[in-house]
Image (cartoon, rainbow, N blue to C red; front, side, top):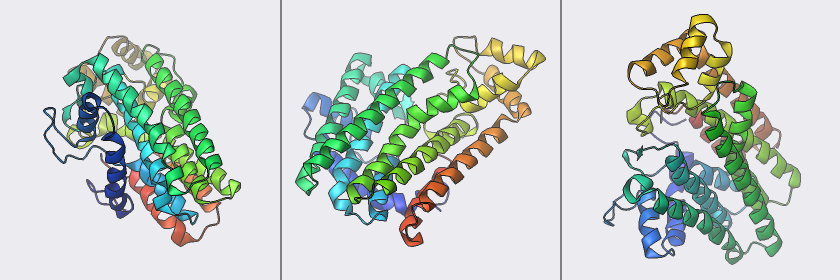
Length: 344
């Protein structure tokens, strides 16, 4: 497992390979769009000058490659699919920043903050389109037409789920009656769908065993929910310097799991106070501290950490059910462990 602030070898070693593939795809884009996309990825500044800031952990693309490797496939063949899931993820981030009115991502102004909402929507749409252009490159790597078509369908269905999850996430901001079941349904779509297609695509393109693909899909889905819950914990109790976001989830009134749990399990004065605070347009200053104290008192962090741990173990159980050699599972297990121990 990686130390704090560092990626485990299982992720870090594949970033350069994925980055090369992503650059090929993104650099094929018309220049006005390309500048925004390259900026978002951390490859250049807002003036178009090259820089080398890291723009993310490349978790989904790494999971795709590791899943392919685990089932005995050729990772170089599935690089276009790994690039495609990373492009879909980044399309969702560009649009997510607009929806959340987030000023910063990775300690830099977001695309919409620099170029405006309309152009950021165009940039996100371009990123989405490039994902499918990337996926079609599977044919050039020797993947059969039938598998390219099925891969396209798999990714499209995951995208639809992602959009539904994002829709629910926004809807829940204005509701005080969201349940933990509602939340888990949202997380299943918003985050876990893309994790699941990352692992299942890798397994599908690397093997002919449909049962294996099903296990990898379930592994990715459970891991995605665990990841989202842990992200929620970091969004409230994580250090801003580590996570690189300007606003905490509380200030944006996000109905993350600890908050949903708090609203569901508070009573009396605490419930009235939470409901009042979450009825405001935004939560600032001392009010953020007060929400955190109430959540701490209710045991919301412990609840979320325990639930994340449960989903993490469910994910590992699906991976072990593949009955693949432990050596083949090792990198996936290391990556899964990192996702639940990270501080960024």
